[in-house]
Image (cartoon, one colour):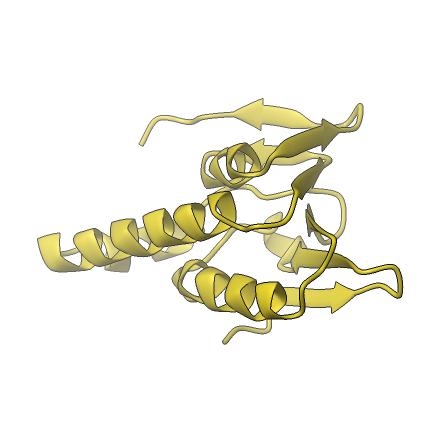
Length: 135
């Protein structure tokens, strides 16, 4: 599990999944990508009425943590593993059985856009900036 994904469920049954790396604009590291399906499964077991996905601080998610790219993409095997982990995270969010809402503010870039697109509903405030950057 990771300290960079926080969850809670309110008294009215609404779950929140918060990406929590605010100093890095909530960029998702490999540990976070791998943890997302596990976290989502645990939330599903709580039977919430809905799930809000949000970022901690001023940004939704700046995508994958590029500081790990040199290591993650150093071999074909490691590149295949992180790609599979990211796809599994996307699939788990897209398949979540309760309504999912992306609450977007600030940066929503790359993999962050992917996460938002896996949600049923996307709500963005006036600070939201969307981008799919070249690899």
